[in-house]
Image 1 (tube, rainbow, N blue to C red):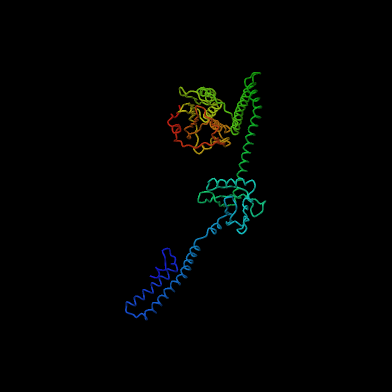
Image 2: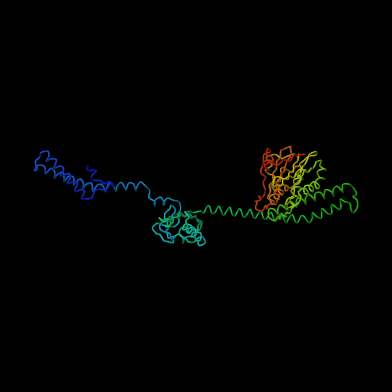
Length: 481
């Protein structure tokens, strides 16, 4: 009963008047009970007075003990939960708290002393004064973002570390806004961390990228210069060897002399083709290859390719055939570039096809796409070698004893020219069964300038079972005749 009387619903003790009334009630109740029991008044008064005094003493004792007990419980609770200040002190870097205008209020963080800050000495502008003048705009922009409602902001600046104004280090400042009851910015907290190692890595990557770009540009300029310089003497070699081979100024004394002149002429033409390919490659890499797009009949380009290579095919005993779909229509593209693509692919097919084999050039339409296919029954390419094709100066057989000549630029040039047109290029092959090269171009001459052209280009290795129908969504696959 005493415990319930001395406590209110919220755990606090009653007011002094209530404690006195309760003690009187206890004393009077005791006196009345003794009277009803037949005890004399003279004998019951001392007992009632003693009980009244005991209840008052107990109430006063509870008044003194309960606050101390309650305070002890609160102290234990506070000691058990870490304070916000101690949590901030363990965070890496420098942690600062600012008011709405950016004035510094407090500092914390595991690296506060390393940054030259002390919680005992706080200056309102200590943080922004340490920011390098070139980075203060970014710092103020981050604060302005918080004022505009952003929850977080970030700024990478140079910061004076250790109190030395000239000893700047790259740091990252993360901002977190604090809002009042109305949602307005009342202040913000920042965490400043050293990003010196990260900045050094970024600088190293940028330097390596610049060196690679510089080396690539130097190589491109070198190829262009060498190609131009080689063309002049090659024209003289080809011209005079043609005159000698034609015996315009007299017949040769023996067949060996004519044979040697023919070898000189043939070698000169081969070298000129390599030089032209190198020059075109250097133009594509430098982004200076200008396409002249115009509508033309793709059937004429296929027929011209057949006429140009039919003699070489017959000399090797290879059958060269062409198949052009009816009513194919005109394609809008650079005719010279498309002609070069067909010549390079067909020349490769003839070169790698033995006597008695067949090389077929097909032209068909699949929706709004032009599909050019050059297939052969030649030696084929191993699956692990297909991924190497299309890289400049890379050949499947690069040994000194290789059987087929070439500089390894034909397919690389094909892929670059196709990419400039916004098209795609793929190769399927099987050792001993032949090879099929497929070029897909837009009929309407879509601009390929936005397409990223990768150099050296890489051809994605495709499984032999993947057919051209899967690429063209139902287009007919060209078969070797």
